[in-house]
Image (cartoon, helix red, strand yellow):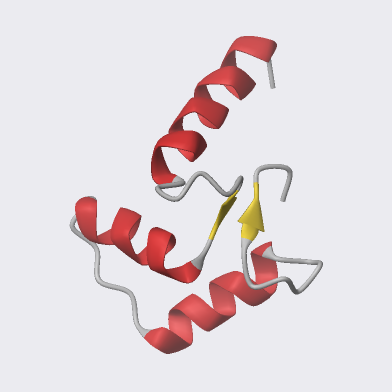
Amino acid sequence: MTAQQRAEIQECFEMLDSDGSGALDVKEILHAFGALGFTISKDAMSELMSEADPDGSGELEFDE
C-alpha cells in the first residue's frame, strides 16, 4: 500500500469515527454499513468483529 492510499483510508476511517475516539465501535460500523445501503445482522457483526479485532477491545483501531 502506498503512503497516499494509506492516507486516504485513514481519512475515511476518521470520517466514520463520529465520536473522535480513534476507534470504531459497533454503532459507528453499523452506521457506515447503513449509509452504504447494507443491512448487517448481529451475528454477522459479531463475526466481523471477532475477525477484525484481534485485541478483543470491542472496537476497531485504524491499525487493525
